[in-house]
Amino acid sequence: MQSLPDNSVKLIITSPPYNIGKEYEVRTSLERYLDDMRPIIQEMHRILTDDGSVCWEVGNYIGENKDKEVFPLDIYYYNLFKHFGYILRNRIIWHFEHGLQCHNRFSGRYESILWFTKTDKYTFNLDNVRIPSKYPGKKHFKGEKKGQLSGNPNGKNPSDLWVATEKRLLSDWDAEIWDIPNVKSNHPEKTIHPCQFPIELVERCVLALTNKNDIVLDPFAGVGSSLIAALKNGRRAYGTELVQEYIDKGKERIHELEQDILRTRPIYETIYEPKGNDSVSRYPTEWLSIRIDGINEAIETLKKERMEIEAEIKRRNTKE
Image 1 (cartoon, rainbow, N blue to C red):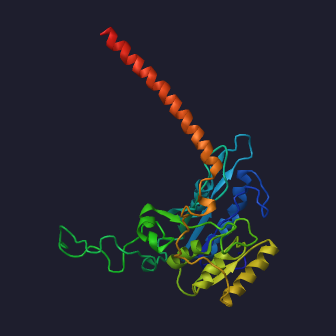
Image 2: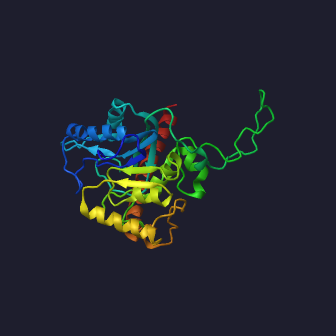
Image 3: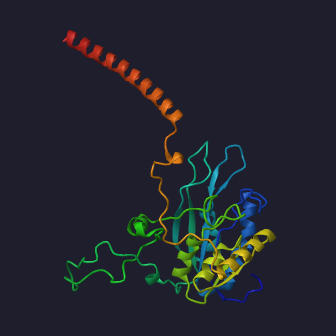
């Protein structure tokens, strides 16, 4: 980043290491980890254009102590960004259905995107992300505009929710959650990287916060998903990455994009929902047997409780 000129990058979008011991990071204390990030965030502010944005996607840091305490990184990063003068515009929740199964707490199924700007004059292409109005025929019922249509013919402002599929255009945006599949083994974009960015997650930010030919930078580029999302939509893309294997894979994917053979998940594709008629989504027979045992036990408990209640009622009636 030090080689880039001042005020040259329109959008910086990335998911930095979470300090949880992945193969591409060295685990340290939370304090040391945040101190290491400080000069990066400072340098980002220098190269960001006055109308530019940062989208910083993070999850949780899990403490190494015995109690395995959870530290939500977006809370800690907020103060770091504010120290250098960034302005928070939205805290977006990225929800996904699959991930590690926890045994001593609820399994995590969301991460946060902090959208910061450098100044109050930032690019925001609302028309690129409008959604159909729920009530396009709604009219003003009082005031000077009484009787006039109250909506926008291009659709409504989606507040801070982005859509994952056409079928959820309304419900997802109003819920203020981005419901986008994470990149697991059966995802069409899966590569060698253990924590890969979904391209469609980046595309939403690119479309809303940049214009054609603007520069998009990912300082933790991994296998190039952010760069691909930018190039795919007519932007220029820079990325930095330390692991040569990831760099090679990223270049390979960009070449496949150029050849129009790169496998990606379409930005509005419906998320798969099990129909219940395939083996993996049916309740296993052995579990059904266990469930029957549980039901029988519950029946016996209820019978006992019923007998106790009936006996108490009889005792009270006799006493009266």
